[in-house]
Image (cartoon, rainbow, N blue to C red):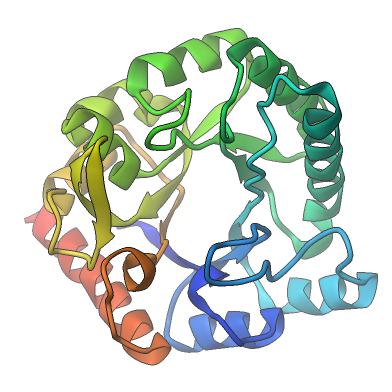
Length: 266
């Protein structure tokens, strides 16, 4: 039903190449490359990744997307925002070296909307020159974390797409089908991650143990003719003390997507 992917951010201690091999060996259709420094791990790729390594990774693909999250991307502070934008533009330039056609960003911490729109417009211009689709991921607690504000960003930055992560929108809105119906036509990539709670108290949890009805979500995605990748972004080890190891998470997550897709087609 959908093409599957797995985000390398969970693959702590793996080189980028080894992470890609492990994900592909478990049967995923593609890989989402992490370029973000996470609370539990360093990025797998970045501006310093040598051309030879980029070429090797290109041979190991395909790739669903690059996660190019930078917390300073929407700041009003010009010096920090400028540095974050320049970093993002250079990463977009490198995306074709990996064979990647989708890069997604986040609003960033303490974002100012007008500054964020300017950053997104600059990134859109660069993406267009390099044949790259740019997606924005609404994030819980950030200035763009709900469907209406995301739709306004799409209006203000023509050509921008959405990286649809239901975990954030579940916490913020508790209406994933409604969010998909509003944003689905703009979705270039979808994260698979479960969540519980409200904006005041929330957690990302093991798939199937949160509040998201993924069967219904898949049905609505299909009705919206979404044909991109659904990518596991596993973070429950950090947010809810999930003790499973990498191999088990890779196996369980792929089985979850496959079984959910079958139920959605029934």
